[in-house]
Length: 115
Image (cartoon, rainbow, N blue to C red; front, side, top):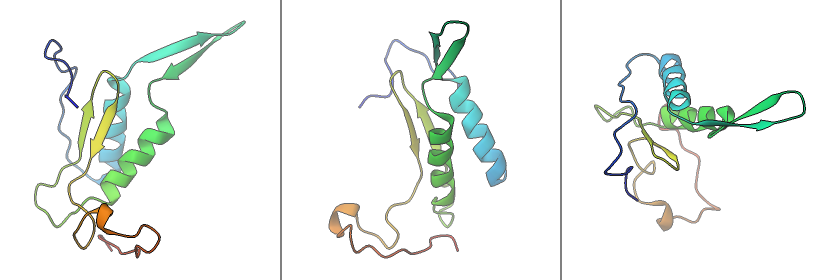
């Protein structure tokens, strides 16, 4: 898939450094600030409908931050915003090497990357 359109400029570009709580907060704000919010009109009020549920964004960012490979220098989490989606990528692969396709998903052991 292509990252955006050749006719569109990036909405925002930021780099953040700090502790995990700061990175989580900053990543959430970045996604919220670069997402659309539509609304549904009810009888006496309106209900905002953001592109991405706050709980889903938090879960994805927490997973990316916690499971990131901190042994790899300059291992950064990337958040890419597209017209139709957000992608959150974290460096590193399967713990112990290989790819998910090489494993029986019912017998993968739980191992800590960052004890």
